[in-house]
Image (cartoon, rainbow, N blue to C red):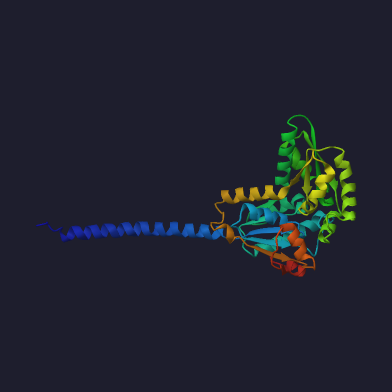
Length: 322
């Protein structure tokens, strides 16, 4: 016969097991809660902001590199262009738009506007509880890397097309100099390009061709190895710009570089969306829908999207702080 275990021994085992459960169950529950919280954080959207619809090129790049992420896009179309406004006004508008996006509980904000990135980003970085990433630094990094690949040593000049505010800020000059003091940036303000693009003027328009030829003439004579498109609108005219500049100049579009920086940041935060690529969505908000939204959005994104949600600019001015 098998010897029976004494009742007292069985009770001792039960009490030991109970103590063990009481010690590990809270720990296990805490682990599960942390994992659940992390997944919940990771599924929050990415907020993307621009003065108009040009930032949709950044949204497109984000979707290409991070297809599972949900994007909330805000275009301040009623108050563009930002490039001719004072830094104080640009900061005020950008702050209002980002506060609106914060109501959507984003895990990260992308400032897809070169003018805001150049004149207001440093102030915005300290005002929000989530990371804020601009498009200027990634573009400067890519341009210097490209220039040095073609001209490894000595002085080198690269070009920049941008808004008046971006040029005046000298932010691109400083960003390039921090990376390589021997790489010199030559900028050209292009105040007519954003209005023409937002008006829906085609790239083959004689007016567009003439304006671009005038803007590019001083840069073309330099034969720069790289030309930064310092506004997210400008890629719409990239084909003509590239043709006018010639084969020795490579255009630098900061959208792809910015998307890579965002992916790296989310990886560091352990906040990449855990879903499938088809889970990614795009929701658009604008301050002035206009009649050309659909055609313009299609040009920037390369695909059709649903109609945006209209937001009264007066609402932005009364949006509370975080």
